[in-house]
Image 1 (cartoon, rainbow, N blue to C red):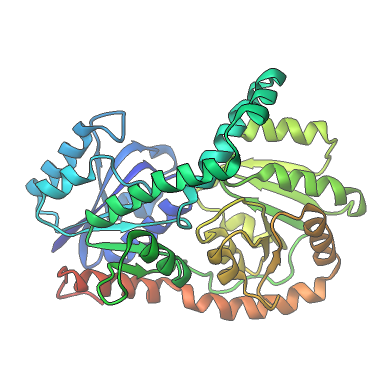
Image 2: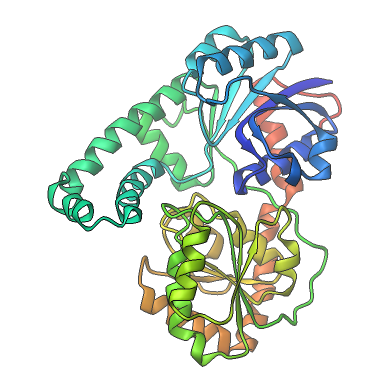
Length: 398
């Protein structure tokens, strides 16, 4: 049986890791699956992962260290691993790995192109805001370089990193066609010789769901400031909570911002917000919720949006990326797209959706048809095709 390996800084963690779990599970019948990992969160590791994946603990606590790169290369040679798939974070010493192994390398990009630029700007500002120091906050706004200069600086910096990854991998996988064209322009790839491939995230839809949902609005995701911005949802909920005394907002997830978010909910006097913590399998929450809300600044694809659709939960989000707009569509039949980042419009759209149970039931049928394109069987087969394209095939591959 042929061997392939993935590499993650931490596992399991969020949406990207769930995608790896699904893809690995699909391929495990035909390939032996390994996963290099910096931090293995065994307490939340699912049974399928325990069964299907052989975990290889990286020796250095610094994920980006040269020692870890050397370990990866050594184990690939020793175990006869025939393909390395790198989701999310490319190793700093990718070139070292490339030069010391004789197997194809696939980079699986899980976000929108150049998301790092937005992240850098927001994280820098967030650190100042969290410090609580008004002098530092004033200094940030008065003395920082103009935003246009920072955008240019960070775009050039991260553009060089994308070109580095492109040079040192055999395929560069992105989430939708618009991202493919953006990456090709960024790295200077021609359409005829491009290594960029499009691979939508897969999901496993429940066989059936109860269309009669509870009066619950749901957030599912990491509680981090730069990207997910769950604080926006609390501000939105504060605008409409008094109008809907029989509805509840459930916050599912954990992260560095959770304490601040709980404090924000108390400060706003919100009485019907429940923080549920991390859920390795959020299906129990999708089963009962009527609406899922995403308020992210940037998203590559937004797996939770498709998961919600599959469970009959109507999703809504700011149209912050091509991936989000592709999932929700532009006709309002499979979800609600709100112009970024119009908080008043979001609150108004959410309130209208909460009032209109008939509209939500009509959307459930459209959503069910929409998610057929994301089935694990379809996307898993495309992964098999990609592996065959780079010379990795199995006699038993489906």
